[in-house]
Image (tube, rainbow, N blue to C red):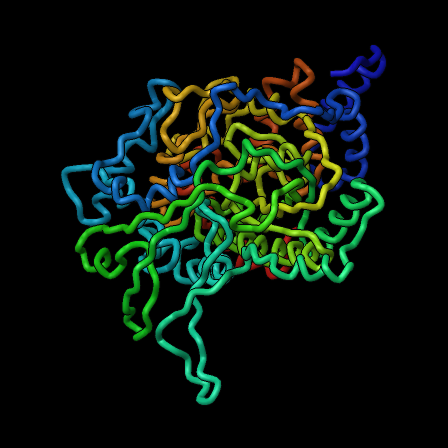
Amino acid sequence: MGEINRRNFLKASMLGAAAAAVASASAVKGAVSPLVAEAADIMAPITETSEFPYKVDAKYQRYNSLKNFFEKVLDPEANKTPIKFHYDDVSKITGKKDTGKDLPILNAERLGIKGRPATHAETGVLFFSQHLGALEPLRSKEPGWTSLEQSLMVAGWSVEVEFSGYTANGGGPGSIIPLYPRDPLTNETANDPVMVSGLYTWDNIDVEGVRQQGKQWKFESKEEASKILKKATRLMGADLVGIAPYDDRWTYASWGRETNKLFKMPNGRTKYLPWDLPKMLSGGGVEVFGHTQVEPDWEKYGGFKPKSVIVLVFGEDVEALRTSPSDLATAAVGKIYSNMAEISYKVAIFLRRLGYNAANCGNDTSMSIPLAVQAGLGEAGRNGLLITQKFGPRLRIAKVYTDLELAPDKPKKFGVRDFCRLCKKCADACPAQAISHEKDPKVLQPEDCEVSESPYTEKWYVDGTRCGSYWAYNGGPCANCVAVCSWNKLETWNHDVARIATQIPLLQDAARKFDEWFGYNGPVNPEERLESGYVQNMVKDFWNNPEPVK
């Protein structure tokens, strides 16, 4: 914290305490908001750093995305042994009930398996079969999981699944999608698909033509280029935009694509699938087909060496997210993944028309959160997610690599990590107990984490296998850690309250309690969220309110 005089300290303390005490009173928001911002700027100014703000050990190696929970699902080797969590019972660490330790047994029972926990592949296929609408979730009769919410969920994800290649899992590069061709004479649609490029295409073939015709747009400076690219990206639909330099550390160590086989579906069409869905649905067990794996090579697959990365952030719907862990919350997430594909594609086309190569990516190809931190868009929180001032962790990230040299932004700090040290709401709200309860982040060692985590970087540990196991049990993704987060507010002035609270000793212990006192985002306890009827009531409120909350 920078130097402040005694008068400003007292002023900030009084303003901060008053602002926090009335943070939920909408009638006084207009009056309080400027005071909160002023106090926050005095007590917890936003600072910039020239270097990546978190420790990266010299032993660090690029992350192999095929080891993350969702890609590992498709590895036949992951189908040979039952899941064993890195920490069998976290109650020994937290002193609280471990609500996640029995998930592998429960998921196995859902598949008709008795006497052992589910394997990694069985767990993942159970999740995907529900997530993509082929299997009903356990709570299908409850508000939040009915066919109404499931249909909205499938609709929200439809562009991501059908037109971008479903890169939400990771892998990369680019995307391949199946389309069913139509006979131009009879207008009949074929039953057999053909594979074509999706929205995350890396096709830069037209760029050379633009250059040969002398039509490449010349910017006056890197700063001007960044300004224009940010403006264009916002116009296309991104909520936040930042620029990061190309950093090879964040490119995945392996690129890969799932291996698909053709299956005949009940409607008569054939469909490419990475696991044997008919076999699973008939009770014959789980069979997965692995990956095609390639070495990362930007020039081979994109035709250029990246110089800059345009990082795009998209905010998710607050009404839907607060219903987590329901399928309604999942619909909001899917809608944003679909937007990511469309809008990053438009940004890539804009660059190519200007005569610059571009490779647009979702979760594939590289790690998104370090790039967003480098681009000055937010900080990495306890829950392993990017936290921004505007949306908190209620967001998703896309990126566009280019050989246009842009002026990069600098990483920013605005109090997230100080707050996360004290809060721990996300860890308490996690049904799988997948989020670390340790007070401070640390440079993780291999023995500290399971295989889907990336060691030798400074952060709080998040167990992807525990998290994914709950997603399978739940019938869809869970976003409790997002929904309850104290940074997940509609107005940025509420975030300033959090900044202040971490800097005033009298308020530090109460930093988390403000949200709970004022009833923000529902119960923290994952069982209480469901058993109290909170989630079900929020789902009903969502459908009864035709106007979106902004």
